[in-house]
Image (cartoon, rainbow, N blue to C red; front, side, top):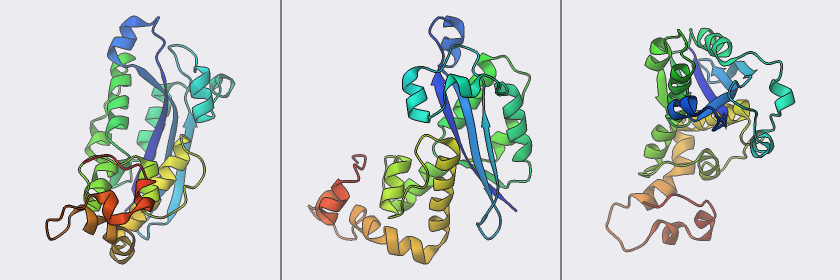
Length: 220
């Protein structure tokens, strides 16, 4: 039994490719994923850069992701990397992503590039861990990965917008989620404040004070 935690980094489709832009407005430039075994230890990882077809990576996205146009110049194209990723996930019980947007991106990019690739098997394993974790905390609006890491009182490993490190941090949140004692110790006070047993006039920020305000949580 294995669980996969994955993330994608994208760049926008150049607007000169109007037909493609109307179908899917971004292209994947990086796949990152980790695989956990039954003891929740990392047993494998997957990281591949992807060569975009519809325009170069804009400077802003080079800075955000740390991926340059030079980095992807000799990378494989999307279909090759997607096929490799799907095969790598073959033994996984569940493929978790932080939000449903990554699966939407894969579907949109397959359509945009008119690829003979079925996502049915991969989609059947897919789960939105952002939604699972946010609901477990007791919030109605989704947390960003950074907010969730802050709430769980752990340090963000690596750097954000690196697909592999985002996947690893999501996996660490999963470990906390699966450890009932640890989860209740870390999240319990927040969950109690969000869903008090008795109706009060206190807001979430009132209940947890300035430390909670710094997390920049989504409004209810």
